Image (cartoon, rainbow, N blue to C red; front, side, top):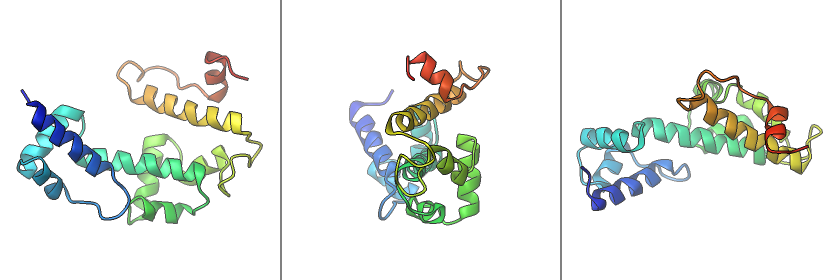
Length: 164
């Protein structure tokens, strides 16, 4: 059983791992913040949060990249580097495996090649709906109960929430 003090340390460590700006501490450095060895930290982190520190860090980077692809006008390569990846190939592969499409295809779909949400016939209202649907689809794809369910498109999501 983990004590409250240890839990707080692990939550702070999780916040450090999520940071994508500036210097990103190594797993060993983050483990020191929890006053545990690197290996004990990895085991405890996975038991507490359901994924290893490395998996968590990668997921956080990919989520930030997705946000930047939708909201900024940086190139895919610039975004790849900004979130801490050093290889565009690895980034694109991980992004596609996680979200079901290449970063450039995602950007075209949400209509943000210039950082403007109204590109490609997207209005602010359906742009937000598209992003919400993406989050809902990803969550249902990775949830235990949602693995065998058909993945809906944006129009199915709109119908469920009473949208357009």
